[in-house]
Picture (tube, rainbow, N blue to C red):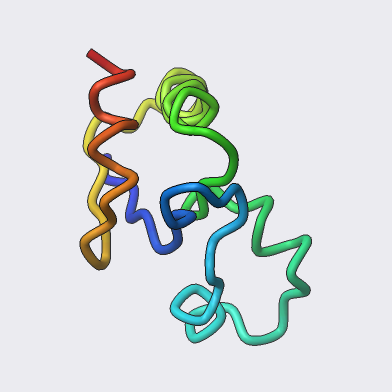
Length: 80
């Protein structure tokens, strides 16, 4: 199973820009969007923990980012 990552915070931030995700879920509030599996929040370590726990609970094994995110490099390092 694949999981598309649609929002990742910029380096130094903990909350991502939700514009792209909002295109796919226009009726959801910010809180509801932030609670989806496709939006990552927090520090790189917290995002890695989120991805790990989501993989365990849903059984997905592949992550795909909709756009390049520099912050994901730190998340990938945490997952290794």
